[in-house]
Image (cartoon, rainbow, N blue to C red; front, side, top):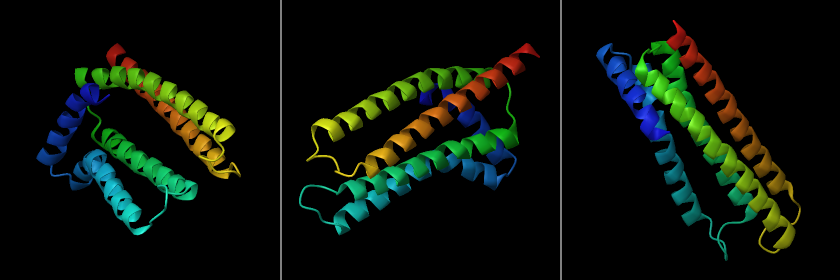
Length: 166
C-alpha cells in the first residue's frame, strides 16, 4: 500500500505546499503524526500502569481502541486532502490498485486476528479475559475496520476507473 500510494502522496504534498495550503499539508502528514502520537501515549501509559504480567485485558482493549482511532486519523487525513486537491493521472490509478491489493491483506488479517482471539478466549481462558466483553469489542472493531477498508478501496478503484474512462 505504501509503495503504491507514495507517488500520489508526494504529488499531493508538493501541490499543497506549492499552493500554500496548510490544512491539506497537515492532512497529508497525519499518516506520520498519528502513529507517533499513539506510540508515545502507549509507551508512557505502559510505564505508568504497572501490571504483574503485562497489561490487563481492559488496558489492551483501551490500546486497541486508541490504535484504531490513530489508524482512522492516519487514513482520513490523506482522504480529506484527496477530496480537496483532486489529483489525476497515473499516480491515482497506481494508488487505487495498491489499495485493492492491501484490502485483501487487511481482510485476511482481520479473519486471522478474529480466529486467534476466539481461540485464545475459548482454549486459553487464563490468558484471555473471562467475561468476553473485551473480545466482543475487539472483534467488532476488527470487523468495522475491515469493512471500512473494503468499502474505501472499492470506492477508490471505481473513481480511478471512472477517471481513466474519461
